[in-house]
Image (cartoon, rainbow, N blue to C red; front, side, top):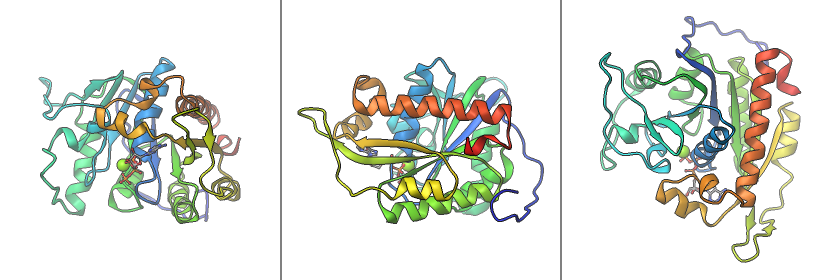
Length: 278
Ligand SMILES: Nc1ncnc2c1ncn2[C@@H]1O[C@H](COP(=O)(O)OP(=O)(O)OP(=O)(O)O)[C@@H](O)[C@H]1O
Ligand SMILES: [Mg+2]
């Protein structure tokens, strides 16, 4: 094990057939932009000719069906496996495709764990280069089920430029390390504001918290993504902002992060034990 040197042992992990790399997009704190970055990272990876899927593991607060503009209702293939949705060049599945928005989910621990596994193994995911998992906030049942059961290639951790979020991001890093999953890097979201008039990025927060935290934990700092006031409209329209405003500073930041993620995954594949701090 990496990190504290403890050794956890579990039932063997089960690969997801046809999926090369599974990458969790996680944070400790809620509302820092995980789901937004997941769909936009997916769009940026798909633009690099990768076949990309997104699994919404936030069963209690699903966002992916809205962010990718997919409809309710999931069909099954003849073999009984559910057919993922396809929009904007991205394959996806969310509880939002299975339940109407006004219905709450009243499943407790074991059922939740089972549902997450079904969304991975009982879904006819096509052959994918990358399956991004949009994680729920925190370090509860769902992340732990995934970490125990699924071979995860790496995690991308999201934090806003505040101590409040960075402290929780650090907890998420510890959780992945505890399960020997490489943390590919940390993204600092909503760092600065893109002026809608001139497109310049103005700093809103003092900063200087997330990058030093990543350095302290020997994890790559993937850079920052600015707060873009048009992100809400794109989200509400079900279109990744990366595709809607491909020339924006926002899209450029996402393209850079996608490239770095691809490089990190390639290094992990080539040399699993050495790549994390490269
Ligand atoms: N870079 C950004 N610029 C502008 N708005 C953003 C940006 N990132 C996220 N947002 C907005 O912040 C809000 C929270 O984002 P999002 O739902 O992606 O966070 P989350 O971490 O997935 O939240 P949760 O923990 O509840 O799942 C949304 O309204 C989203 O549109
Ligand atoms: Mg979310």
